[in-house]
Structures are given as structure tokens and as C-alpha cells.
Amino acid sequence: MSRQWHTSEAQAARYADGSLPEPDAWSLEKHLESCAGCASRVSAAVRGTAAGAVLTDVRAAVLASAVREVPVPRSARLLWAAGPAVRGAWSAALLLVAGAALLLGQFRGAPEARMLLLALAPVVPVAGVALSYGPHADPLHELAASTPGGGLRLALTRTAAVLAVSLPVLTLTGLLLPASGAPAAAAWLLPGLALTLATLALAPLTGFRTASALTAGGWLCAVLAPSPQEIGARLARCLDGAPAQSAWAAAVALSALLLAARRTAYDHTD
View 1: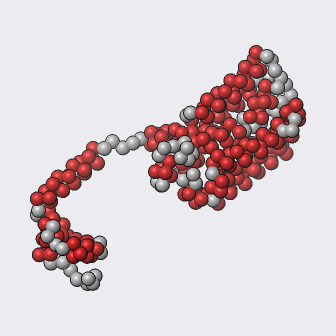
View 2 (view 1 turned 30 degrees about the vertical axis):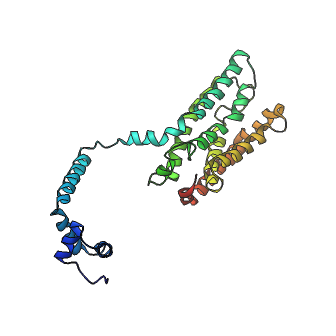
View 3 (view 1 turned 60 degrees about the vertical axis):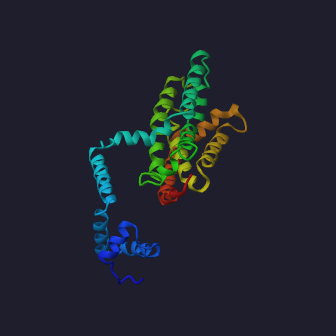
């Protein structure tokens, strides 16, 4: 049938009562997609049937329910989005790292307690990011990622939750440990942020868990291998002084730029 035709009152009535032949009904339904006048005529015919009264009641009930629905507070939505980032194995690992460092420094007076903490601290938020985004972390990941608040926005929300928990816990732990020639307790913050942003930038290419393994593994190899006995000297080179911290600041800026440039890639990231 041509798009130029219009349905008659009789045809609309036959469609409403179900007596219109199926091919004609399909053609009419296709025509209604682009013809407001015929759509109104058919709607009026349907409302005149017994089913029309039922549909009217259902519509009224749905509208009344929507009016009564209590809007979800923004804080509640934020907590739901951040939830997977601060629960489960990662939270336990964070407490384990901080608690082990405190025990090592308190009960044995080990001078290397802060150095070990500084070696591990930058990879703790990386692990948190890896465990907080994707189907392995959230049963509703596919649904959440397809919403306007999904993708990079959701990943950044969960990353912020990880950093908001790990930064104060690990920094305070470092302040409670004896310095013993180790870098300052907050010296790990820029490296930790740089590794976290690098993981986010790399994730669309490799997936979150592979990206975190690459960034965290690279850091651990740099400070612990090949000889853990030289950890103090390697940490000093990586963390101490303005040149080292400036290099990490530049890495933060570069990772942030790469992340911004590839933000649309998060529409397809697991």
C-alpha cells in the first residue's frame, strides 16, 4: 500500500475489533507510524471497544503510580554507583596491607615497615579499580554501562570511591610508622594516582584486569626486583625529590589527557 492512503472509519473499527485481515493490519500499523490523523482515528476506535476501557484503566494506574513515585536521592544513586568499588576482597586487601605494616612497625620495630608500605601502596588503588568495574564486579554491569551515567562516568565514580578510601588510610598508616630513612608518608600519592589513571586509559584496549596487571606489575618490578634488599634505594629514586615527583605529576597529566581522548572507548569496555 502507498503511504498516501488514509484509513477509513470502517477499517479502523475492523482493526479495533480484530476482524481486519492480518496483512491489512500490518500495513495499517506501518502507516500509523507516520500518520498522526489515522493514529488518532484508530485510537478512538480502540477506546470504543471493551478492551479500550481496560487499557484506559491501566494507563490511569500507571500515571498515578508515576506521580506517587518517590524520587531516588542523588546521594543514594551515587552510593549505588560506587558500591562495587569499596566492598569485597579489595577492602579486605586494603586493611590487610595497612594492618600488616602497622604490626610490622609496632611490634618488631622494623625500620623497613614504611618502605614496604610505600612499595605496595601505589598498587592498592589500581587493584581496587580493577575489581570495581566490569561484569565480574557488578551483576548489573551491562545494564548500568548502557545508561547515560555508564561508561567512563561510572568508571570514574568507582575510581573516586577507591581513592577516597585508600588515600587517607594508607597515608595515615605511613605517618604512624617510623621514617627510618624512607621517603615521606605521602610520597606514594602521585605515583598511585598516575598508575590508576594509566590503568583507566589502558583498560579500553586490554580490559581492566589486564591493564591493572600491567601497571601494577610494572611498578612492583621496578621497586622490588631483582633484589628486595635494595628496595630503599629504588624507592628513593622513584619517590624522593622534586625531579621524581615532577615526573609523576607529568605522568598524571599525560594519563588524564589520554583518558579524555579515548573516553568514547568506554562505551564498549568490560
